[in-house]
Length: 324
Ligand code: NDP
Image (cartoon, rainbow, N blue to C red; front, side, top):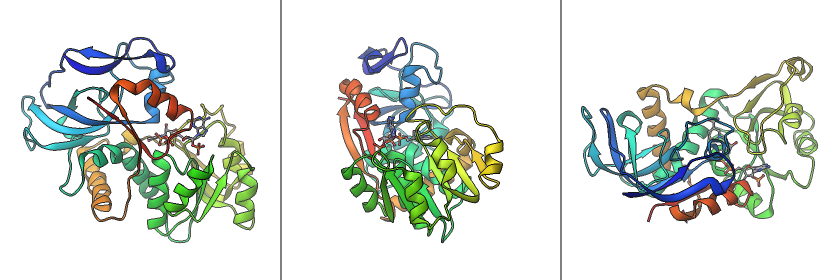
């Protein structure tokens, strides 16, 4: 038996049951991995509370890193003992997880395993957002909500590295300092002041080229008003709740705006694209151009507290779960 977290009914953090399960077995094209660190992501809370449906019971978590313990039939290019990281394999909140070989990226030398676990899902997300959804170019002014969060700190750094000017929003002074440290030119405490008014002031009324909005319900309406004509609202998450239906006419009134709701799965859908994004991400990390902040580590047994802290806005950067 191996330690794991199981969800048998959807709900609050108390539905996360820490216990033991039969060891998972790798099928054809899969590898069994001894998990050294599992990544906590906001999407895990959507699976736990039922906002995104999963078949019950399930072991939560999509991301982690560890050491290959066994190869399933037909796997080539990986060996027992290899360090790998993944962003898209359900069942990561466990001492052992089965990962499709094509989703297991070999961790480069010079990157430690915890950093790899911390970088994958949020790093690949920040990567596609600034390179594909709205490719940031020098001179673009960019608004990043929740700039001290897992995606936020990485997005801020990547947008800056492409020559953007970054305005970040955060809820606390501590988070403001982290966003500034990641390179944000301006930081707005959006729980204290109206961020749309602040953006208008900072940009001299021009607005921003793009808003990366992972907060959703609480920010969406005012995010639309922050855009310059033909600007992009990139709604990529809902940490404050889901956004209500939108009248497309508002995009016209705002100045021929664009609205998109992208997701990571569609940006790593082929092995080639997955590998290319991983290689670029890890090259930036290994080269010291991208810093991955692990804000907190929790023993896997304390998974409930980890979810409470993430949803209670008490975390910064990446949150990792460490199997015993
Ligand atoms: P974060 O580390 O950013 O945590 C969420 C943050 O959202 C909080 O720390 C908080 O920052 C902010 N927030 C604002 N309002 C609330 C609220 N009412 N309740 C809770 N948090 C709030 O999480 P992640 O980096 O894991 O994810 C960020 C967003 O990105 C999520 O919405 C997630 O679903 C999305 N995402 C989307 C992906 C995609 O491909 N579409 C992939 C990965 C993530 P503060 O205290 O500063 O306000």
